[in-house]
Length: 111
Image (cartoon, rainbow, N blue to C red):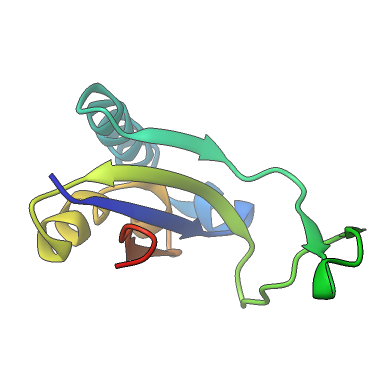
């Protein structure tokens, strides 16, 4: 079955304003995705890695990607297609709590 990388964006203030029942339902949905085999994690503090011309790694703190909302977490899910993947993540906390979730198809390297 195809795999998809999901990136959830959202901030604490938007999460906190969500009705408690809807928040609980969104977390219960996350638990169902994990039962299906999804790998999920909360985003920590990133670093950027460069190794231009294989001259040695240069690591600096901070994100490279910029967005209106902070990255909240990641998951790798399985779904029949991108439409099913989008449906699956539409009930997750970031999607429900005024954030957004990106869905990226994972393709094999060299394909």
